[in-house]
Length: 154
Ligand SMILES: [Zn+2]
Image 1 (cartoon, protein in one colour):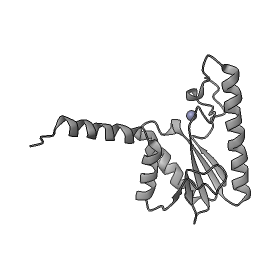
Image 2: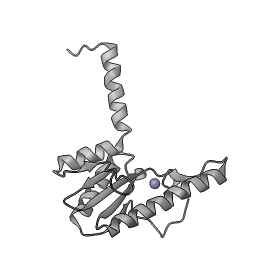
Image 3: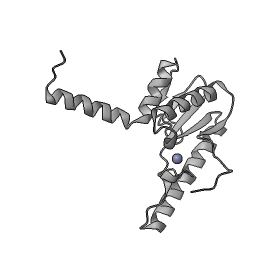
Image 4: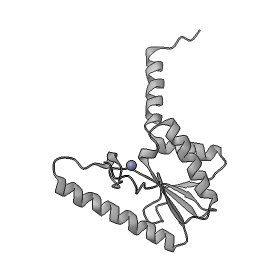
């Protein structure tokens, strides 16, 4: 007997929907379940990194493909105000690179996880595995997904 009011039900639905649209949260809870402990949004570090693993000296940025100018199709420029967007997004890209370099110089390792690698549950599971592999490695910088230089089809 599962009788719920409409209000309750729609509340549940909205909860499901909002957590679905937050891949970053899902990644965080997956990592937490695996036993990783981290801090969030450290304002004292360049770029206020999203997820910081102090003991592992490792940092993860979850990068929105459009705002951070990924090479994937989700990052296509709008058809109007191209010049404005081009300039704005390039500024973001330059800032990202600067923050990355600064963090590497400070001895942190940096991982960029692009949002296009988190769009489905299957992709997220794969990404979590790659994140864990990276955390256990000694690689200083990596991106998920890794850039596929052989394919230039846009
Ligand atoms: Zn992307």
